[in-house]
Length: 368
Image (spheres, helix red, strand yellow):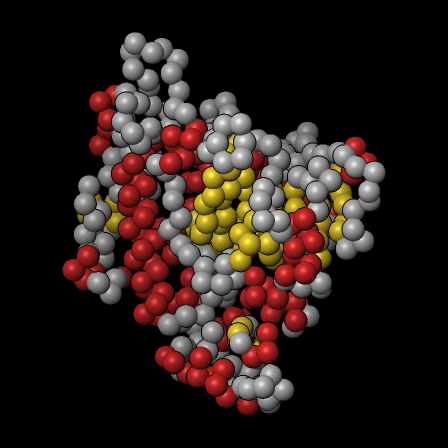
């Protein structure tokens, strides 16, 4: 992360205490450096190598996870706002009052001659909710095919575990497959505390017991009378702690459980979820994404499941928690009730990006 500091730290056995950040973790023979964000944040005002400074934008707007120059972070923020504007426009209206529009907005009425017509999920996902953020050190953890997940900068989590700080991973939905859990152990850290949660005992799926490093729990996740995540977190002693990765693939339960994922006492850094179709009952993608955006999450990866009988009907999404200050910037998301006139609003001026928020001033307006 800090190139000029890295040049001074070869090999890893060098005296790290002499470095200005006071706490650098050396990984993979000195090829990568990870900074303890909370230490840098506590040292606000000190200018470090390559223009980084304690308490800079990336630290404050990512809750200590990222450390980048303010210049780079402003680029990220501009790209995010631009993508949110595009999504707001796509979400905002039913063209001609039908779903003949290729964007297929969720909840729009179908053509009069096709009563009961609904938007095909694969058409919807082709045109909605693309990633607005990227992770330079993103890696696939687990199997190569279905079941593997993309994790944002897992080396940062590895560095955290190397400092003997808690590394906590929840994997909801198992059906006797522990490839993701094994990937966490081998690719991130064997110090990570891994909890697999399923609605049925493991013996319902296989004769082989879970690996020794997996803590297996039987819960049916959901609001009462099922078990909300907050209760699981409390019973496992993780209240107030960071759950580094929350992976959930529960064959559709996400649509009626997500409102309880972030209850009091629960702090999740990354959410890796497979979304099945486009919702259930009256809960659809707009409500789901609005909930996570409001909580400070951004999408950093999207991957269609093309192996199913209906390719593209299900989508793998990966979210990382930053802060609402970054995610919303100014309010850029529009409520579905405003479809007819919907535009994305930044600082009250339809889709005008704040000039001082971007580096490319000639790109200060987005169309639509």
